[in-house]
Length: 196
Image 1 (tube, rainbow, N blue to C red):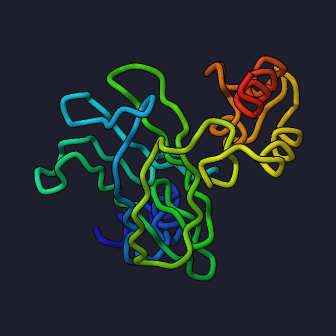
Image 2 (tube, rainbow, N blue to C red):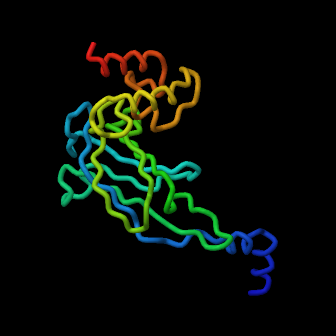
């Protein structure tokens, strides 16, 4: 009877499916901090969720809803699942690898999900304080002021309204919230840069 079951599994692809190796779990990466939308600190009553995604991975690699942990207070605590790959194994549907860039999205209620930050995973088990939404719109390097080096990155991100734009370009230079960087955003950057 056991042999019949093994033969049935073999021919149905069951054994082949069982031999595919998944990644080896590693200590998670933890990001935590406060979330600001339009410079207003978000609280658990604001119904805010934070989701972490990695390009090429089907499912989120982390998710947190403000208020899920009473110990966190008004902070989010995002645990990012991490793994390493053994020879011949493929990346899991819900885990990141060291060196990958995690895109961190924030959603308020059932509204649109907005990219708030990109985070490159430096090492396994890393814990990082990272406020979300504090960056000044148009500030590429995060120094809270607009300067010529920020303008240089805006120029790189100017692909036109129909072009696919990198996530960080949209997160930094999409002044009007239409998920692209275009001439309207260029004009908004110019006003913010010159004060006129």
